Amino acid sequence: MRTKTLTTLFLIGILSGMNAQDNVDKNEMVGFACYFAGQPSKTVKKVTTKLNNKKYNSIAKLLTSDNTAERYLAVISLEQLAELNKYNLNETEKNLIAEIKQSDELVSICSGCTYFEKVSLKELLTEKKKLFAKNWLNRNIKTK
Image (tube, rainbow, N blue to C red; front, side):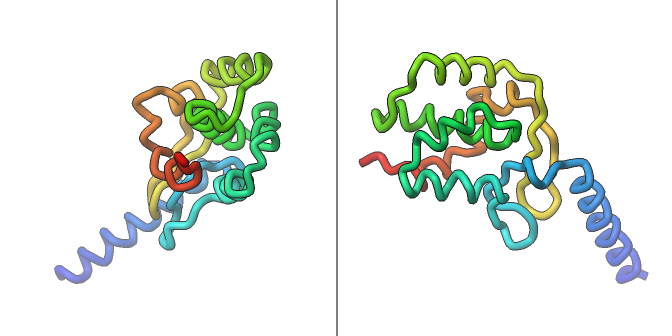
């Protein structure tokens, strides 16, 4: 009986996790360790490559992307680069960043196997939520 109960609870957990995944857009997802294998999302991989290759102007172009995940990653990356004096934001970029920080558009986020959610850009770009990307930024933007 105990095994049957545990199996039922396990299946409910798996199925509810799958249902949560249906609510997000996998093409516009920000995740640094998603699914069972803990892999970064497609958008995170794309921006990571640009950071590692120091294609900062290419990242700046993402500020005008239709993809909300790309805009989110562009904002946090460019702000970190500017803080470290590795990139100089021009006025247009500063204005775009300010606009994105006030946006109610939704971005899909994931973490692990079962955490999938949609959050507004405005909420995701608050100081409190910046911890979400802190390790990724520190790994991919070297201070030296």
